[in-house]
Amino acid sequence: MKLNERSVAHYATCDSPADHTGFLRQRVERHHHHAHHATSYQRRWFVLKGNLLFYFEERESREPMGLVVLEGCTVELCEAAEEFAFAIRFDDAGAKACVLVADGQAAMEAWVKALSRASFDYMRLVVRELEKQLEEACKSLAACRKSPRRSSSGRKRHLSNPALGPVPEKPAVLENGYCTWGSSGEPGGTPCPERDGGYSKPPPLPPRRRSAGGSAAASPAPGPALAWQESPVSPETACFSKLHNWYGQEIAVLRREWLERQRRGNL
Amino acid sequence: MRYNERELLCLARQPAEKAAEILMRVPKKGSVLKKRLVKLVVNFLFYFRTDEAEPIGALLLEHCRITKEEENVFSISFIEEPERKYCFECDSEEQCQEWIEALKRASYEFMRRSLIFYRNEIQKMTGKDPLEQYGISEEARFQLGTRKQ
Image (cartoon, rainbow over all chains, first blue to last red; front, top):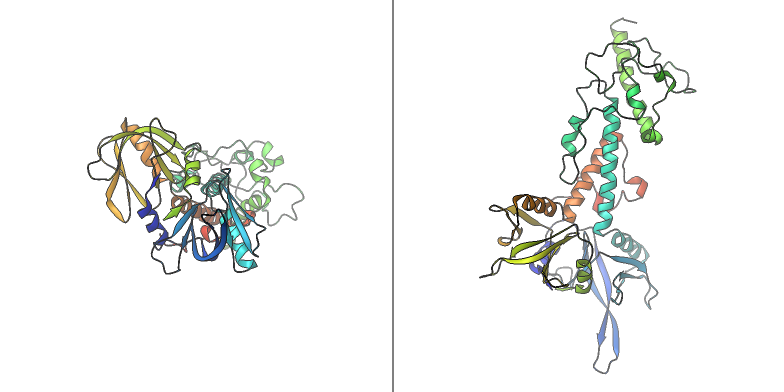
């Protein structure tokens, strides 16, 4: 099978950063014609880039000697005659494992860690997880915005990465508790969370809160009575740190407003 | 350069992100468009004769450029040799665009950049590093802003 070797070799030696490098001894089996194996360990310079492990005869070699493609493999410590040995084993039955020997315990551990996370599939998994988290973070923040102008559409530019599917273009009127924090309360009419003693009950509704999907000129009509009893708990706010940050933003905004009013002598 | 061909062949048999029969021309003198089964698996593009189980060849899709050529046609070339183009003629403009998009996203380097971007954005928005919970924040491959591309 052909491979675009020149390009692959170029990728190996170009100055794109490597994920891990170092000397390792590679087990080499030599077959003699009387069917007797000679096992030796050759010291080579290894360079890990993405899911590709290149090895060079010398650190200064201009071209890689070889390449190990790291998809569909597992990395494990191995019981070899050598200390600090580990093996790259392939899913393909009958394939020979690639046995490597590090210079010491720390080097071995670092290589095993780096190699076991090298697959494209693993990277893809992490990227997808972060995509989801980013979407959730956007939704949470969009719901916090007081001014509906600054809706999630501003964030969408960041998310229009071709890798992502389209983020739904809709106002952040979500099924969770956020949208019930409607346009209730007047400025200063609601007890400020700062003045509230503790958090023995769900924090009171922040004043001047408009639903993100509502019109800009939301009148301070009392929101649904529901809002007072409910806390903004939803599957998305089950994570305390998110909830904590969310409240933190509210408090920062309220504090600013309170200071403003103080300055204007409006209290 | 040696490589674990056996593992590559195994990879070629894995479910593909994208596969289709497309006319393909390799950058060799006198070569013509031939119908090939083209299969995208992770960051490799395998190409097969339509009736064979083993690929004729594989292209590693790192540091490559995907270019729209004329109608229905796109090409793959590599940074160090931009004139050497692998050409692909699709059945329709739509198919052509789909392949271009898929191939542009198919490199490990692209995914790495996406990950770093998301990590950065999430950190800005929530103040937390999303990788911490996986214990991989310190891995070289996930570092923010220290890589030159």
